[in-house]
Structures are given as structure tokens and as C-alpha cells.
Length: 452
Ligand code: ATP
Ligand code: MG
Image (cartoon, rainbow, N blue to C red; front, side):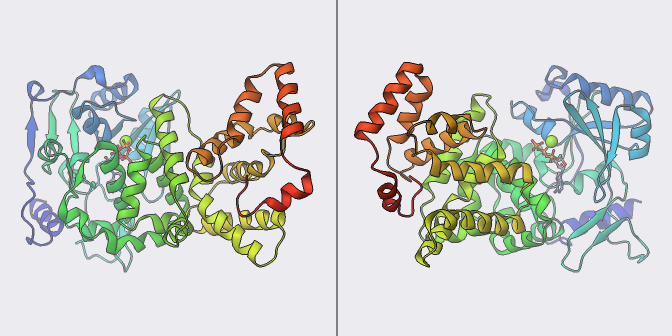
């Protein structure tokens, strides 16, 4: 067992090439860290206690420990245990077994989900070809990873050192196997083991590096940073549904603009949004994307909700503009060109990241409403306001105006119109009739490539 463990450690270290990482178990007693039980949710504590009482080891791990150590509030709580998924499932009536690639258990408490994973080991250098528990593809991609192990092995298969810290609720210690505490102090992200190997096993780790760097305002340590750009295209082989989930995580942590900059810097925008990367490289401005991300970040800080379809509508807007223009240049009339362009852009995007229909529909509506918002005469304004996506489309218009995508003015009109009473609305509409837009035919022909 011990030699096996040593082999694994040596494999993770690239066979002794890089000995900079500390890999001895270090226990930090309660009076030397700030993780207190009051920071941990009741459901998470319940799961820890029940597992312990049943005779299993159980620790809080991952973001739950990391964020508390950084004086932050964890988004969710993950637990690692030596109980098998079935044993965990049997212990909690309110649980379900999920996942194929990684079998885990979700214990449900109302809206809170506690994720419980069984300690994983590393059977890669077990050259028994009948091994079906842990499998990698010819490119080094980890296909399946259900070999159970002990806590130390579990620590070493995690991604970043700061994500491999364990909190023990029995004696209140924090346990560090990979130098995570030192890296937290130095505010840096460091992959455990040989970075290239670890990215090849799971290319999504590159996106996780960016996500944590932006969210925590950490540096990516040089050896962890170095291979990213070159390996970025490995993400092309990741299922589009998993990339969609990652995109949502990337942009809903409240640091969207920083995340966007980092993705661009490391060549990771292209695998996620190939058309956006191409359109901006070809000179389409991305100020609208930045403005939308700034708005989203501000909303998240205020505790407001953000919708995936608004984010995608913004991310794909430059590509939509380019495609729309291309079709008009080929002589397609404005409106059909717009609809065709929207369908085309969505069709291409879902090959990179899936977009569930419940999001792609509303996204298209936000775009289409950009053509409707300028047409306000008669009963049109009131009808447009009834549209279920009006509010999102109006917000989108404000973002377009703030980013210089279209002339300001229309947004203010809609702001006033929504705030006005019946009389006020009549006045706004009559002013429109006297001063405002020219007859329909002329106004249409004045459209160029902008939906204004
Ligand atoms: P947050 O929940 O705040 O996004 P987190 O670090 O808890 O951050 P999760 O996705 O919840 O991230 O994963 C929990 C833990 O599982 C991580 O901290 C890490 O230890 C491990 N982990 C998750 N994804 C991977 C991965 N792709 N490769 C290796 N370890 C991973
Ligand atoms: Mg987590």
C-alpha cells in the first residue's frame, strides 16, 4: 500500500522532476485557523455528524474550506468520505446517487444540496488491463474515475492545492496534503502534480483555473499557467453540455469581466464561444459584451438574479451583427436576414456549448425585440411591453446604448414610458407622432446593420 502510494506521488510529481510541492500531511489545529462551525451550513454539519456517527471518516473539502479560510462565504459545501456512494445513499433518505464519470451522492435539504464524494485513489499505474474503474483515453483524458482510495490519495487527485484542504468536524483541525495553506497565503493557484498531465486528464481544469483566478483575485502560478494556451483546444473534445455548465459558473460568480479578460488572454474564449472570438478578432467591438458583464457583475453584487439567456444574447451579439451584415451584403432583406442570422449563430454555438431550448428561445426573443423596440406608434408600444421578454430586451437596449452599439435616446424613452401613467404615455406617444420617426417605409430603409 505504502509503495503504491509512493509510486502515485512520484507519478503526480512527474517522476521526481518537480519536487517543489510539499506532499506531507500537515494538520492545522483549531487555534491556528479561522474555520468555525458557525460558518458551515446546518445541512453540511448534519451530513458530517451522521457519517461520523455511523463510523465513517467525513470531511468538509473544496470550496467550503477554501472560501472560509479566505474569509469568504462558500457557495456550497462538498464533503469527502470513506463511505461508498451506496453506503452514503443508505444513510440518507433524502439523497440520490448521480453521475457516471464520477459517482457521487447529493443529499438534499430543501434548496441546499450537499455533495458527498467517496475518497478516490489512483489506479493508473495499475497496468491490469481489466481495470474498468479508472480509464484514460489515448490523449490522457480521464474517462472514468471510480477507484476508491484513502484521504491522502483523494487529496492528490484534486485539482488545485487550495481545493485539497479538509476540515474535520471531530477535532476541528484543517488537514493539508499538498501545500494548500501556503498557496492560500501567497494567493496563488497551483495544480497538484504535473500541470500538463492534469490538464490532459481533464481540460476543464483550465477553465477552473480562470474561474478561481478571477473569483479569488489569485495569480496562476507559472508552471500551472504555462501550458494553458497551448492546450486550450483540448476543450473542443469536452461534451457541449459540460461546457455550458462551466460557462454559467464562469460568468455567474460576480467577476464576469475579469473572467472574460482572462479567457481571452489564455486563448480559452475560442473553444467556448468560437464565433465571438472570431468576430472580435476580425474587428467587431466587444464593448457590448463587457458592458453586459459589468451589469451582470453589479446585479450579482446586489443579490439580483441573472439569466443565462441575457448573458448568451450579449456574448453572441457581435457574431450576430457580423452574420446579419454578411447576409444583407448578399442582398437578403433586413428582417429575413436577421432571423436567418440568429438561427445560424445559435446553430453554430450549440456545437461548442449546448444551450438548452429554454434559454435559446428567450435569447432569440431578446434579439428580435431589438427590432421592435424602435417601433412604438399606435398600440405597438403597449403591445411590446406585454411581451414576456420585454424587460430583458429593454435592459439589453440600455446595455447597447451604454456601450455605443447604438445611439442613446430610445432607452430613455422606454424608461419614461414605463414610469408614466396613462396620460403621460399618451403624451409620449403623441410627441413621437409629431417629432418622431419618419413614415415606416423610410425608417426601414434607413436601417443599416444596427437594430436601432
Ligand atoms: P465552488 O463550489 O466555489 O465553485 P469548488 O472548489 O468547491 O468551488 P466544486 O466544483 O464544487 O468546486 O468541486 C469541489 C471540489 O472537487 C474541488 O474543490 C476540487 O477539490 C474537486 N474538483 C472539482 N472538479 C475537479 C476537477 N475537474 N478535477 C479535479 N478535482 C476537481
Ligand atoms: Mg463547491
